[in-house]
Amino acid sequence: MPHSLYATDTDLTADNLLRLPAEFGCPVWVYDAQIIRRQIAQLSQFDVVRFAQKACSNIHILRLMREQGVKVDSVSLGEIERALAAGYDPQQNPEDIVFTADLIDDATLDRVKALQIPVNAGSIDMLSQLGEVSPGHRVWLRVNPGFGHGHSQKTNTGGENSKHGIWYSHLPAALEVMRRYQLQLVGIHMHIGSGVDYGHRSRCAARWCAGRRLCPGSAGYLRRRRSVDSLPRR
Image (spheres, rainbow, N blue to C red):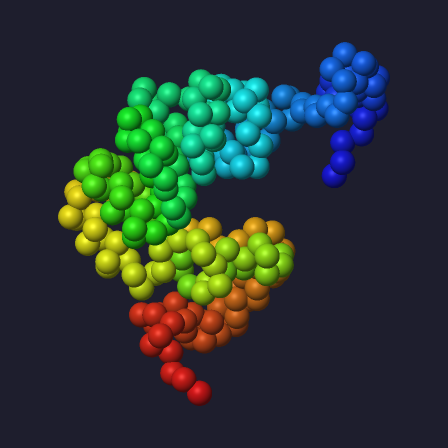
């Protein structure tokens, strides 16, 4: 719900905003640190909260997030440098920054090697490049599970039409490269899309639970099977 500019529980008010263009010029972007802290607090139940810098790479906001214990995900050398400028220190805290990509250039490769930043690799070639210059490096595997979902086709980042991630059936080849260079697997990552209709998912889950109560032998059929591939074909 949009926040009222006449509310008194924040400094982000109409009176304060109207003064800013005269001081800073236009255009001017304004963020409420109090709201950001509140949003972060809502996620405190999770072991790790990691922010995708591509959503907002403002160094002041990154610094605020770091102070609140939030880690970051960088998808370019520029984002790595911004995270460092905001005070993230991967040599002191190895989990501070994760570099995520499907390709990597020489300059970025040199930087992640020097700082020992964990790499979330979205291709087997990327694993080979990293292994050749930094054996034993800590890596994540970015997996394409073969399906995706989003509020539109443009935000569907999984499945055969997506460029992102190592195709799930190619994982044995990825693991072979990791063994060759003694790369350390420290995480698994999947991104299937943005704008998923969680309300629809909740309704489907409720129907599934209701089916379990009415007929336990039918609603649990899929779960008892070893895999989807073992289901009978019609």
